[in-house]
Length: 364
Image 1: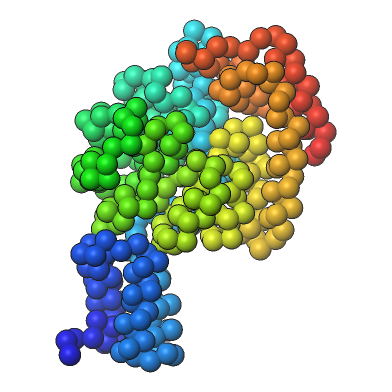
Image 2: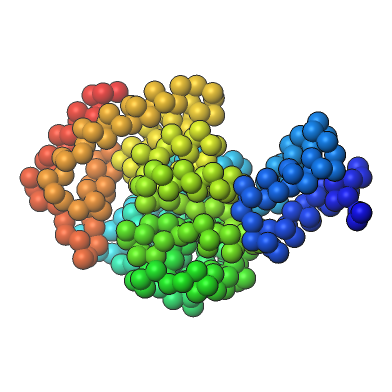
């Protein structure tokens, strides 16, 4: 029999980790498949009690090896808007105020230049300015930057820029517009990015917008990169999200929609929420209660009750103008505007949203 990869004392964790990473790379196993394979092998070599102890060390070793980019998985990131003035110009002062606002509301982090940040409407130069504005003073927040474009060259350029300016991680949408390229092509695309930067990378699953799904097969093909940190699942598909969480327990499989928060928290995962733009304290309170082993479900119920009041109050206005206007009311600052191709709110829509916000405030 060959050398037992789990034997020894001083070198046990090192040998074990090397063995695990070899299996991931050579066999393209998910975390769930790897743990089951390793458990069976350990049982054969060590017996039940010793195998159980080994598996506990194994889970900890994998977590240490994986670069997640945050001190904990179970954190709340707000998918922030990008503030613009009425002419559509990026407002750096308002961006800094937004960072401070979410910090004061209890957020753990922010995702900058995601879908809520209207990233496709900004040039590469503008996106670098937005990233620099936030990263210059993170105010203690964990900052993830979205560098995704339909082409590898600009995506890598923006990713390197974010890394150089101190981003804690990246959230990378697949090359959108293309109608579901093959896994082999997507693997090649993402591999170019993983080879170019060393900060944690999260894949962005929002197929209804990007037309390109993040699949388990794609994740498996990239598992040998230790800085594959996880995903954001904004599909809203409860069954699909639950399957992701079960298949990749060592990654941070963040939910991107509030309907999947129960599954996320029950499995120790985080979230990236656009809802945080207008309900940042409510979102933060859910995670604060979870970490304190309190009644986080009661806090989630409060969030949903307030969301119900706001739902439909925009009179058919677009999401971006709505989020920005309500946030400007909450912060007590000047109105922030959506970028073209979206249009601004009407006076009637503003009045409806303002009235609904007052009802929300009355709920405590």
